[in-house]
Length: 303
Image (cartoon, rainbow, N blue to C red):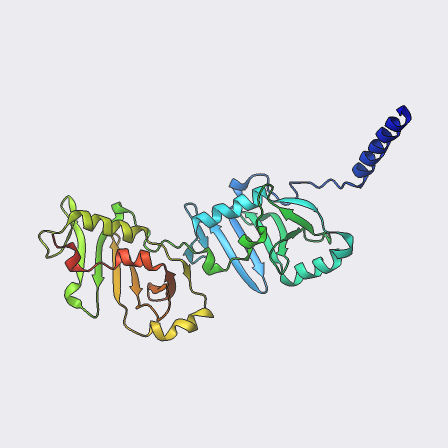
């Protein structure tokens, strides 16, 4: 009996030692940067397309054209900080995964000024259940996860330039607000203009407006978000609708006389979403419930 206990103990020792010898230690910081706060530029390149995120001192900007979605930028850096290489891809699959990454992957560069602080490749499998990171010049891809979460890590890197855009449409501050003009082409009697009257907001030509409804309306306008901006290829689906008259238009002017215009079009048959167009150039899809809050007509505010 004593011999059996000793033999069993020895087996456990040998198994433990064997497992330790087969375990590959992976540097968890392999794809991280030491200080994210110093990063002021991110470049994402894939299939000949490039997305550049640049911090201009007050906000992140997409391709030097549009303000970036602050939540997505936060998610991006949180992903970089938390993602860990779990293990190298098995030797039997390394060649095929390496080739897949080179064909379909995203090349990510993190820069401080014009100095590249970190760059690596990211990709995932076709089912979008596994993510691989790989350093340039290294033919070993790593399986990457975020400990404690079952997420497709590469999804944040696969976003298009339109996906990265800030979805808040007007984004004005009350201290810079000057006027808001709402126009209804099919019923111009319901047009109205909101401006600051001494110590409060009022509707031009309407002596007694319901101030509670007016303030709720202005809040809804200032906070409205699009669901997504329409991509160039997808815009053809909406071309005919964009040629029609909008249901209504909202034009906001700030104290620097900059204008921000949103046109909202009639809902397509069978469509739950609503199509709008920002500043006469960018089609954007909205949630129907949010549009309802900003579609108020002049008669709505009469006390």
